[in-house]
Image (cartoon, rainbow, N blue to C red; front, side, top):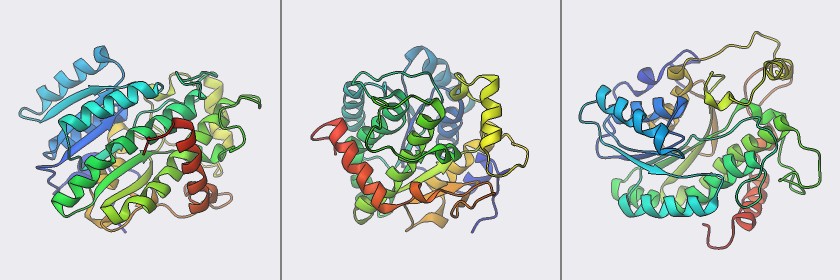
Length: 319
């Protein structure tokens, strides 16, 4: 449905699109894809709020963006997705400053880390990648709905998933590895499946109020996300690929392109709940082929089950 592909860059997909008057929030904005995503949204005229855990890491990013884009409308907030108290505080602060939010890019995440626990005791990857963003998005829904009502066009939420969702679905009996042996890639796959199912569930619940959601696979990019990945892990990734074609890597500009396309493309108006890759709507995964989304990561019934589980885990009044 587009002229874009895996080689397309953020500047390619944003060409001709103005985001003047719109507010965008980007998590994980102190490095990698988050910085590039924020840059392009700001370049297109949006007021961009960069969210990160570390003030020390975000400060030079903000300065660099201001140097590159004189007059850019940039703001910042601080949040630790692995602590739901921090998520609640950050969401309250952001909503007070920006009661209307048009775009929310849930970009932050961790990958293939050793077994760890969030402040509330959740397995670190599931807790950070999914539950933190689940709560954060829920608390910002009034602002997303208000922006849609005022502008007459949908607000959009982008959930950064990954082809890594193929490492596994949700273990609803033990999502936090309390009884089963921990596997870092299985845990990563579960969290990325959760991101994809969250987009399905959110879109189903909010499309009638002008909020649409998409899951995005950015591709394989060398960023800080891979800081826990050892050389042998790359061999594991290559061996697990359904297609035996050589693994290809994207630049930051190529990697962030699908997030930008999903957040801004007029071609996606009135659509939602979809999994995007290489600036296209992905089809179903097929045995022996790369790309596509697994059935268990796009199933509305599983999305509903995950939604109920997530509400139970993050506590009452979350959404």
